Image (cartoon, rainbow, N blue to C red; front, side, top):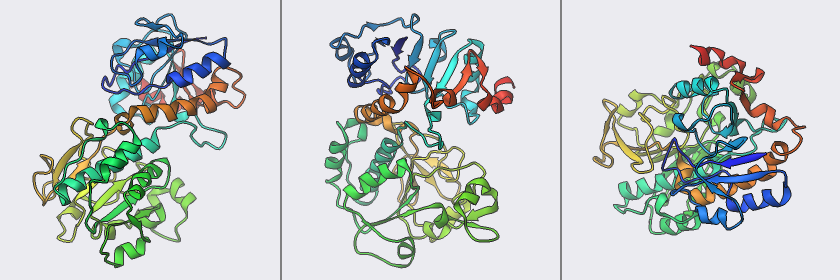
Length: 399
């Protein structure tokens, strides 16, 4: 099997890589039938020379490879007919912005394998960048809070070397008695908590968050049972996931107490929104900073008007008309961060942990016998045709 390690072509400033030199060396040692080449890149966090030093050819043309492995979507003009790609394709949820990209892959008879659907028999994801999305999203929240409440600027995460450097930069902030709200409880939320706890912020229970005042910064984390309620009957998590339309938001009280909101939840499009645009007009709406790590557009958070970028992560939202304004232009506005490729700001840390997970959880099936059907479950297109598990995409693909 000849494998090409791709440079990122769709989002050209993304410096991550799916197979680091560390992992590449392990592949060469333990999978002698696998041949690796790396596509030359001036931006990748790991230089071409690092791969060349361990005997991996650095090339421009990867058309001789059987399997091409990148991180995000490949640029349309870079797609090669008849090849197998592994990437985050962002098509399986019928993302409209990638519909033409999806059609092009089918037309080119491409086999598409998507990282998001590398799952075990319990449907738990095996590889993800979620933890690092949470880390960077939380850092942005404190970066904005520092500017809003402390009149202090700290470097952006992309200027930091690694996680320890993020923690070091945050030590410059002396937070006032802010109330910080977090929604979510998975990998993304664990990344958020890495930063929040590193800041020494104390955790309080949701009810205390709503009813008590504090002389120091505190945070609370909400699970679905804290921010939605069943319209009829008692809350049941499994029932909520299966029947989200039978629930309504109970989030509104938190909008009147929180100063900073970090959204790290998973949201189903049929689930209730967290709050409405009209809630921002309320005189007791208190949230000044929102870091929307989940970044659903349109989604449950009305201030997320659009996604933002690592180069320009923030924008303000004027509450009355829900109009976008220049970031940090008024204390009456809500400052929003909605970067949709957060882990790219910490490419070395994010790539290292992702590549290690791939090596241990996916590569045994990819390079050997897929007896646990890990590769099969993640295959969306096979030679340009939808696989049975993704047949529901037929209308999206053909329309």
